[in-house]
Length: 485
Image 1 (cartoon, rainbow, N blue to C red):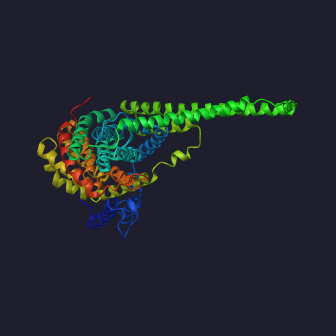
Image 2 (cartoon, one colour):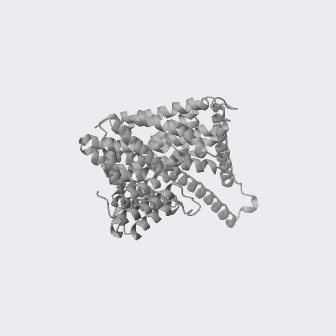
Image 3 (cartoon, helix red, strand yellow):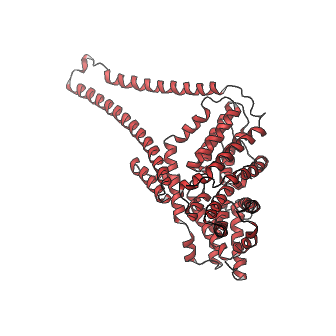
């Protein structure tokens, strides 16, 4: 695309600069309005400055992506209610053999869960649980928080639903779910293993110890839970039996007292029946949530429309729940959806200035993906932009340009270029605390935890994040697209 007029380029750059500043530094003293409002401000400025028309602004909002994000959050809420993430937490603690073993479990479980339930969701749910596990064993929190954040980003790279930038890539590239998964899975598994080894090497001594064995902790918790359940069941049984078997006194032989006793017995049986019915209902809903989620993943692999598949799954859960859906819908991060809407408009306006295309035209001759030097240059550009402008705007800005350059090489190169963009932009989130929303979620959740709070600082993160990002990215790149169907 040719450069637009100078005023349009300048005003569009100013609007995009405002968006970028608030996306990276949402609490700047002179405009502390946050990321979501910053994205809307950028979009409004693009329209006010006549960089993009109102009709084009509406058209630039990608409704399938917003629909998929919304539905995924709804499904995630029902899975959380069904105990999915509690089971993941128990899996982390079960028969753990010490700090190093526990950290390896955090890496593996988080990476695999993030590929299916998004990195942000896993970080929201697992952060406090990981802090609790570390505190119980008198282990430092920092290695486990780093393991959680970095593994969530690496694992989320494997699927289109793992993170927002992968959603954008999957929709724009038309790569099927299974092709996307197989194309990045080898790199994800290798990256997960390398990241885990680097954590072990850097924090080997800190992970050696614990005041009590993990088996004792797990066994103690399990026994407490079993005992509590037994006490509750016994109390309920005694209460019901007492109500049902209370003998009548000689004075209670009249019809009124008999009717009163019968009414009490009926009330007790009704209460027992309602308790059983509610228990069976909850068990059915849990089972249904797991079954339809598996069905949703199968539908993705069969190539069905991801957005409408997710929306259908979400509405099926709402209907079967047979209650007011407002409590579940309230848990949806609508601010994230608004942020994406504003970002789509802002990035589309910036593209219309022609400046991103002009910059890419300068770099394109050095970024061909058919030789090592070109892949290296392209990866460095993606790494830097993902940390300067965040990964989703980077994908929106570079995706079409990278694919167009790859199309001059071969059709297979186009697919590999999209997958390469997905891998590098996602792993780039591990470089610094600001590189990924998942990092910020872990940081804020840990800092605000009611127990065992920990402040994961920018420098604590970057000391490990920088070398991990460079090594994991470099090892994963040769593995991208090695499995084709």
